Every structure is written in structure tokens, then in C-alpha cells.
Length: 261
Image (cartoon, rainbow, N blue to C red; front, side, top):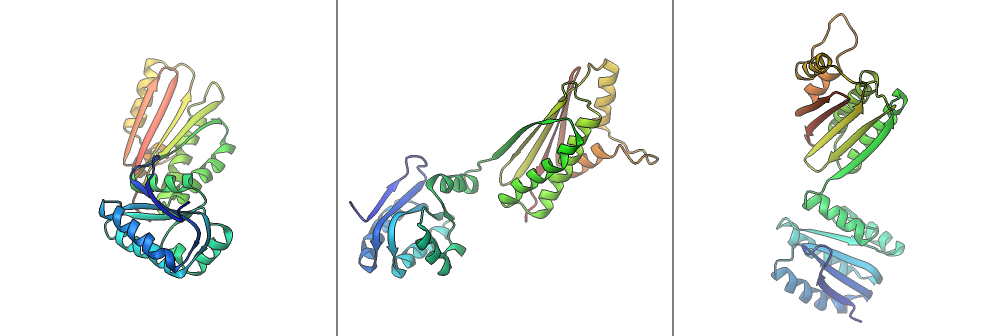
């Protein structure tokens, strides 16, 4: 079995897999370089290095991988490592490789990272929650944790946390769900976040529907009241707010464009 193998991934044809096996010393560098040059010359810009069967990785081999990184990054490509054993992972960390090249536990995690960073993949959270105010704080924290784990900055996460708080409480207190639950859907990618909160309610008359539509279209703040500011705040914080008012169902959706870290 070859100690160095290069091939295109079936699961993600844009990624070229560099598979290393056994002890990768100085004697393997010419083979690695030749294969890398061949595929790079054909346009291979995104690479995943499989270290699952590597016992030893020499400094020159690490240097060859870092050299490949420099080449692909200069052309907006990428490189990742995955499945290094604990001892090898520790060595790479001590060498500072982790600061330049992301490392993952397996190929699936590596692919998820690639799809998020380079193919516009999104993440989605769907929840059916009891219509009780006690569920709102942990839901806010969950949303913040998800956004921060995917690189969203504190400001973006705080803004979405505020929107979650207002819309969830609005669904619970004013929506008065007849079935005792409400739905929350969060979808986000690298550029934007969207949140939809839905609840079923007692049948609304035409007049009540019109009043609710007016509330969402032209939210107002009563200066003599400490309440009623939620929709005004949501509209101010979001880039887009839409709603659907039906006789027994109310849905509010917002989109917030990511500002940065």
C-alpha cells in the first residue's frame, strides 16, 4: 500500500485528499511534492490531509504541507488536517501548525467546515417550546452559543439574542398559544441570520387581524407604558421583518445581516 496517495474526494469533488500512511520521513518528500504539483497544476485548490494512518510525521513533511498551504491560500484555496492520533496532534500543536491549518477529528467534520466556509452552507435550529417565559433565557443562550461557535462576533450574537427574547416573549404573552406551545426556527450562514417565531392562537376576528397587522406594520411606543416596545425594537434591530397573520396563526420572521466580529 502506498504511503502517499492523492485523489479527488467522491463526497466533495472540489476537495483533493492527500492520504499519508506510516512513517513520513525525508525520503517521502519527493513523492509528496510530485503528486501535489501534479494535482495543483490541474487546479486543485482545496485540500484535506488524512493523518489517520500516520505513525510519524517528520519536520520536512510538515514543511511540505505548510508549503502547500501557502500556495493554495494565495489563490483563495484551503487546506485542513484530520484524524491525527493524539501524539501526532500534540506534536503539530507544539510546532504551531494549528495556528495556520485547522485540524479536525474526522473527515465528516472537515467537510462540514469546508461547506460552511467555502460553499455557503447554513445551520438550522428548529424548536417547539412550551409557551412559558422560563424557556426564553435558555433559548437565548442556546442561540448565542450556536452563533459564537460558528465565528459570529459578540455584537451580532447579542443582537440576535435580543430579537429572540422579544419575539419569544411576544408569542407567549400576546400570542397566547391555544396549544401551549410556540415554534422557533433559526437559520444562519456566514453572511446572515434569519429567525421565525410561530404560534397558534384563538380565532381572530377580521378587526383583530387588521389591528395586529397594523401593529406589525407600524409599531408604536406608548410613552406612558413600560411595555409594548418589543416589535419596535425588533424592527429596528433587523434588516427585514415580515409577518403572516391568519385567523388562528401568527408568524413573525426577521433577517439580520452579519456585521462582522
